[in-house]
Image (cartoon, rainbow, N blue to C red):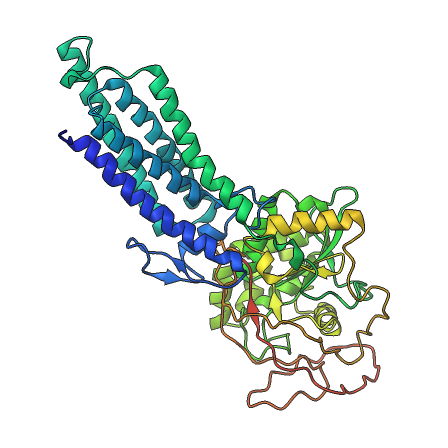
Length: 505
């Protein structure tokens, strides 16, 4: 029982692949508790844990990290399937060694075919990482390398066995009897069991998160009296009404839109967009420009009207450039957006669009919405932050099913709506958002919560006294608005965390 070098390569590659895929699966499974966890991202599995900005987080939060996403919260991770395949390769390579079949061309040929599966899957995933996600995951690279080592070793073992058989006649070398086709069929069946059993157990044991639908607050009113919301996308007949609270320079918002498009359910939502830039230039609820230039780009989106989707798509593509340039020069965003959309130049920065953006912010205040992006409300019911990344497909499917049955109703349905010009109603029992940082895979994803610096904020309306604080936010710019006396707030709401949540960046 002498181990040749080619089979040794298969055994080593299977062990390495099993370790990398196992660590990746463990990272995925930990997020099933709906909490924020670090993600392993290192060529030494278990080290280099990163919660937000790594390529590993981006890959895990993307739509490509799992299957069965609409029936299992987060889906069944592809890494689990990879671990199962490597476990089978390890098992079968040992069987060839112990049964002295490493010189049998049929047995080694079957091994070569088996190693082709992870090798092909690795090639596809590498293309997706580079072409779709724009990043690479170190754990994934470890799996790719292990797959390549396995297929090279298996091909080498098969060629060596074939040459030895031809040299010694029809019988395999080393005096072993050739394996039968029944043996190969049995090996194939065992391989299917290796892969299918863990996936089936995972799907059966995954927690049912549908019970959280409707547990994360709802809108006070969904009306848009000032016409500040913009329709986005194409809705199919009978689509559920949805409102997206979005910052065009928020990486998590970009990742959310990518995940929504990948879910295939975007057209089942009649989507309206509400601009909520986390930029103190126009947003008095934050006291620093978390996303510099977001106010200007939001104005451009409002100016674009029916072409708002084009501006948002451009802003998503140039997010990093716009933020970096605006951090150095506050006028940079206006220069960039006017150069790209010259027809909007006269509108951007005008009192009319500034007043309209201000009304968007007032709508947020009137509904007591957390200072956080992105946020999604379906028929007035908010999807929890944890369900905008890994669990998006699953929760969308559950929400749409409840909407069709008439069961997706805001808890405050039928109650009088709060006035947009009145004091802010404080949310009772609202769960505070976890501080996060913007990243995105990523992708990202989502997805999981990412993010950022905690920034003191106030929800006081412009012209009203703000809560006492060491660092007060800027007053919003003076704008022409209807002269209507606004009643002072009875009690200012507590500070909240301004952040961007969503998927991997």
